[in-house]
Length: 100
Image (cartoon, rainbow, N blue to C red; front, side):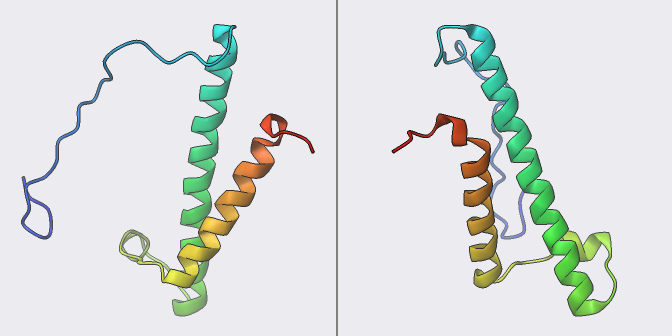
């Protein structure tokens, strides 16, 4: 299988090897942090997709799945999304920040 640039596709393993890392004494805390971070990642992806839809609606007045999938954000849009993601993670993980 090749991609658009005719380079061989990279096949990554679907399973991980070894034990899960442990960061807390209580394994349930590790599980909750994993859940929280995976959920935050999904929210971030959904936010970027929503942003794409809104921008396409502003630009074109309508949207198709193909337009969403082929949308290429400008550097300014990427900077906006990066700033949003940083603020989002700061809010989600604020309990883990050191208070000054």
